[in-house]
Length: 473
Image (cartoon, rainbow, N blue to C red; front, side, top):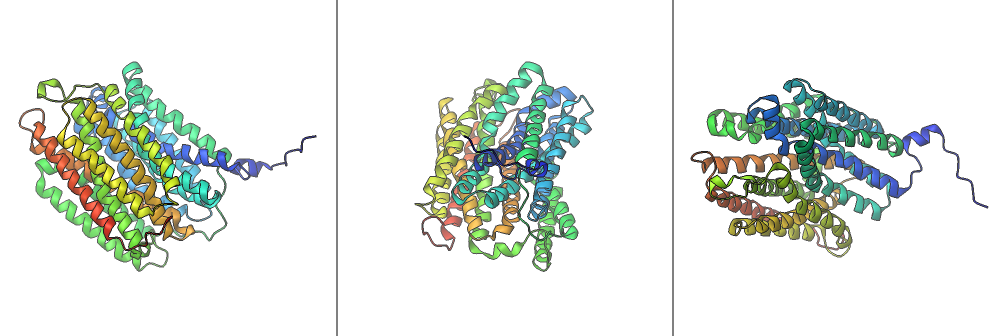
């Protein structure tokens, strides 16, 4: 006779208390995929958005930039609030905001409201750190390590699925169909989170440092705008330089204030730990290189034959080129947790950086046949996946459990800034090598070597990290 299942109260069913670890791990990763969906609905649709709304390409670029901006601003706020007992409420509210933003992108409304919808979707970029904290609190050490590694990869490698799917839906049924994909996924994530996500462990509630939040918002807003808008540097160099200097000064002031605040928005004192400081610096320089190569390959393969190079691929075909990136990134994310007991996290991070460097060298030296960018994209995906999976282990080794969300939020913001710089750097180098319509092919070579230099710098930062190389650390 079978043993009856224990009765669960409505509160337990709603909160997910008692959910099987496998189910909880799956939902945590699925919620993290919202980040990938937000990313996949940006870059591949810029040209279509410009045509559909009859705006310039520069204006359409804001559908990508504004999501990145809102995500960078929301991430530390969500990380601080979600570190306390209200994490479940914070996650559900954030998902509801993302769903509301997704609705705005689907309904035929003016372009301004589309941007508001994309900004609301960008708030979901802060979910990754909260899901990492959930995994660390509610899963055993082995499953938690695997889940956190997958979360690190999902937000990056997931674009290899989102890009071609968004491109295909746009080609078949228009841009609304692509945005409807985002609505469907985010709504499903909200329902899954309501049913499964458990409440956070009982901890004192964190007071939000409103002064720090406001200052960080202004500083990041100025910084990410100036580094993500290549046209600003090309046509208004003085204004761009002044904005960059002011934003960096504001970040310096914010850092000093956070160090002197009893309950800071971000505990910057954690950055005093050499491992955490080196990991975030490596994330910044590595992020510059990784996104630079991703954008270079994507742009190169879509260049019309009239330029004398490139392969003139459609949006959907270019999205398919990202499939190797996604596939090998996922493989790396699954492989890394098995190696963490044998090799130090620093060794794994250095190895993944070397792999990305190899992808740069391949693209710099050989790209005359489509197979070569495809191989470079696969190598890049494996390197990015391994890098993303190894990074949390370094930070969390030196971070108290209750500060997981806050510490990983800082790392996510650093990654966003690095990605933005990488995107802007590629645009600036190619613009400098553009004489008529398309950049000269030499511009891609120059950009590739610049990226290789950033990955070499990342290797030097990792090598200088003063930490033990004992296995599992």
